[in-house]
Structures are given as structure tokens and as C-alpha cells.
Amino acid sequence: MVNVKQRMDMYGNFMNNKPFLKALSSLVSNHLTWSAFQEKLDYDIEQQQRKLEQACDMSDVFKAQGAIAALRQLKYLKEEINHAG
Image 1 (cartoon, helix red, strand yellow):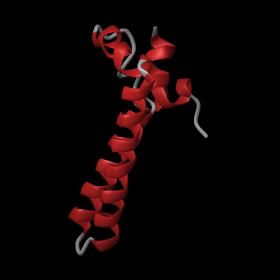
Image 2 (cartoon, helix red, strand yellow; image 1 turned 60 degrees about the vertical axis):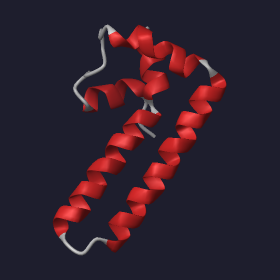
Image 3 (cartoon, one colour; image 1 turned 180 degrees about the horizontal axis):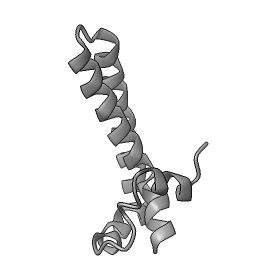
């Protein structure tokens, strides 16, 4: 598994020293809110995986792959905020 530092390097440190990190800390510090957000991400990932399995052309495959990558990146938001803060 990729640790937070490596993941941030893969994405070009896009979240380091951004002013919105403090504003997002309330989302990740509330356990109920964060759990609900994680469940929503998992559901959306499952939906995109179904689209990927049923894709008829490569553009649909690429769209689903991009959506899955973005959603998975959001699953690590808590670690990135805690690491930056």
C-alpha cells in the first residue's frame, strides 16, 4: 500500500499548504460525517466499476477509470489533511 507521502508525491503535492485544508478538517474530524462520506465514495466506486465492466468503447473505459481514480483519491482526504496540518 502506498503511504501518504508517496501518494502526495504521485499527485504532485497538490494539497500541500492550501488554505482550504483547515476548512475541510471539520469534515474529517466528525466520525459520523466522515463515515457517511466514505460510504458514499464506496457506493460511487461500485457504480463506476459496473460502468467499467459494461463499457463498449475505450472512451467509456477511460471515463470510468478516471472517475474511480478520483474517488479513491478522496478516500485518502483525511490522511492528507492530517499530514498537512
